[in-house]
Amino acid sequence: MAMRDLIPWGREQSRAPTMFGGGDERSPFVSLRHEVDRLFDDFFRSPMPSFGFGRGMTVWPSVEVNETETEVRITAEVPGMAEKDVELLLEDGVLTLRGEKKSEIQDKDRGYSERYYGRFERRIALPSGVDEENAKAEFRDGVLTVRLPKSAEAERGRRIPINADTRH
Image 1 (cartoon, rainbow, N blue to C red):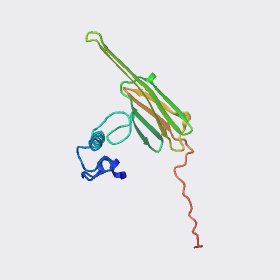
Image 2: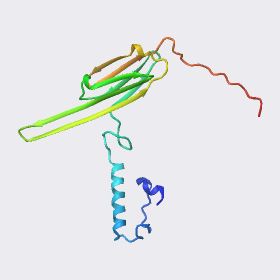
Image 3: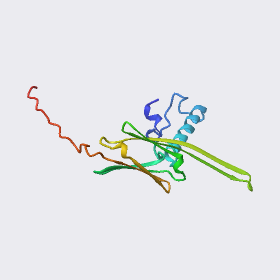
Image 4: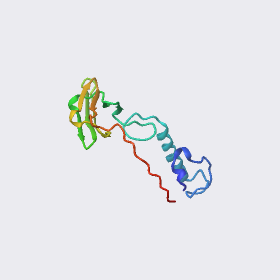
């Protein structure tokens, strides 16, 4: 089996003989392989707005990092959560955003209940020159905004001299 056979969008669609029983479509092994191929094709083609990585998937919560001359601003969208459900840690130039989302719906008239529970953690490496001591966070309408001012002594850039090597 070639590596390209494992990737759904690169797979040949030919019915050539395989190690699972030749080109006979009535073979249970060939039928099983076609069914598994179809499942992988469906999985990679369908949009999935949930947790995880991969094509069509998103990472939650959605985070945006903006850097200006004076500060680094990090915005995270956490709809349906309260301030008490989110924790921020700042250590060694890394901002850690973690939290838990819990939800429970109960309808006694219809006789059902639903529960949802999920944890998340995002780590964001910060650029050098950030003043960690004066970091501020604000939570409003499901949007968390963290502002990290840059320190006054932060270097804006440093030229590195290049020495010409005359030896070859």
